Length: 157
Image (cartoon, rainbow, N blue to C red; front, top):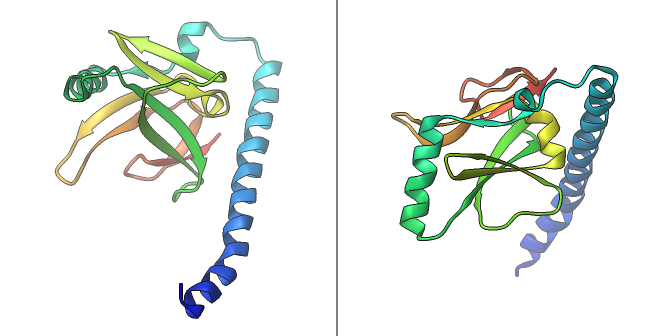
């Protein structure tokens, strides 16, 4: 590694450390605030709290599982960032964690970690094929008040 590369890494390391701490604080404080607001309200029915999958989402997951030859899970998580404050992150996974919530529809399973669940309660996940991209996306989210036009990031209520 050259001296200039090491120097650049030393200069950028504090920035990345600060951003990671900030993202962690944002997720923790938003989640705690949201939980306290929800606990003060009457609990809605479990069906309205579920994260739903569209037919396109289920179809595409079944296609991906057939290509892979194994049963994959679609993991949805929330990260601080994006143009609206928080961004959706989709991943094909093959395992669940202790804090995961699992939503199943027609044999396809969506996995959401407990912190992210507070941000997507009652949301609908879709698979969209467009001219410029094909991707899983959250098509509706009752916890969001706005977001970017590509639906990859959102603002919390």
